[in-house]
Length: 370
Ligand code: SF4
Image (cartoon, rainbow, N blue to C red):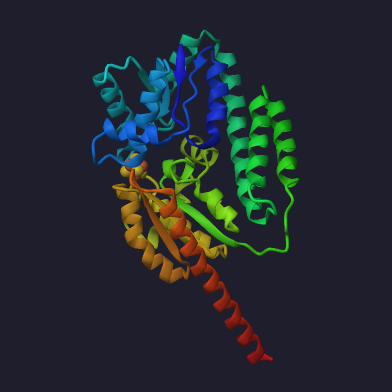
């Protein structure tokens, strides 16, 4: 069968490998573009959030490319994401697209459904259960390696001497992971990929500002949805840390339940948790970034996303209590790269001035003590 999946950051490389090794032909989803968004906007309800529209556009593009099955994830709410795939399937049928969406629900919520859908993927691809387990293990190793490489690229980018060197090295590193075909090969490629990144000429005398990126999972993970914000900030000389990576998220919703810790941190500001999506996380992570000495936080919120709107209404209090500036960027189909860049530049100026004032204050305090 011709199988595709949603495009979410660089993880598409791991899922491409997974589909190809489950006996299917992979239709690699194109990176979401203006055309993807235009298609999604045209065929989605007006007030659907941007992830819904972008996925709708992606599904229509892969359907045009011949996809017969789309594998995606479900969700157990309480926000509307859990019903997305039902709506997408309905809209695709209305548009006469013969594509079947297979949504994998979190196994801790419905193990039988999860296993049944994996069996469907395995049987239509004609592979054994043993092969499927091996494919899933290698895929997971690739997802983790891709996440770690990306995380490292954001760490070193503010130190790069030549603009764009880190991004070029990052793509070279991704190619190495892409070429690996077993767990051992992925681990070896990962070690070599880190060396490629570390070989980027750097100026280690710099002291970059540190910014935490929080918000809704899709717009945080998909660079084309947030206008490559982390790369933009890195090239402005800012080190960014992202609260969500696919390997962390998947682990959290499949094997571990770490939400309890975050809810405890968010609890002074939020009596009702969870509030859906990553709303509670956004509050807790702002507190945590402040505790870890970050200079600021950027919240990425899809327009009309209720969990992030709730978080945004609470974040000014969190910002005041924990002395950390927060910039909220609402993202919809009208958001443009130039607008995002202008707001980020202003935010970077603000953080630099705060840092200078704090340094002057601590110098004066030290002199007074002496
Ligand atoms: S978290 Fe927000 S953007 Fe994501 S599906 Fe839910 S409402 Fe939509």
